Amino acid sequence: MANQKITMLKLKRLLQLFETGSSLNTICSELHMSKRTVHKYKQLVNQSGIPIPVLRQMEDSQLGSVLQAPSPEPPVDERRITLDTLLEEYLKELNKPYVTILLVWQNYIKTYPNGYQYTQFKKYLLEYKKSKEYSYHNVYAPGVNMQIDYAGDPLYLTDKKTNAKIKVVLLCCTMPCSPRPY
Image (cartoon, rainbow, N blue to C red; front, side, top):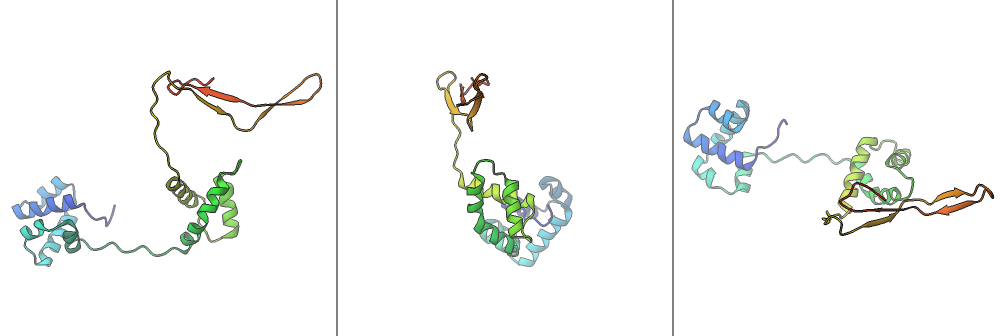
């Protein structure tokens, strides 16, 4: 990606190669960097006026402040500020039955016509949801545990003689290491 800072490890290796007097082609091939980038850092080292051995001894933060320009702060997006205040409410809405992200977005875009389009809205909502959910990975021994859960909304059977609807609860059971539900 263009204009990305190189890592401190690469920067220190680059300084080491500068100090040994390695050629530009050697440095480029070893560090997988373009000649333009290597030349830019060579100029920054020369402009700093600090000898390379002193630069190599510096802490990472000091070295970064001398040889790498600080990243510009991204501009504040009013849409993001507005959306951030609404994410908790939208997440609660999303937990209701039959509510989808598309439905939540449609309500959002009606209220805020200049807001984010669906893809960006979905990205921010899912990031927020992920940051609020705590999960862990269970490890099961085969054949030891069984998992039981009710499957969603109740189903109805119709009695053929009386035409009465009978509410039926569906129970799903599975062994964690088995691909077969029962």
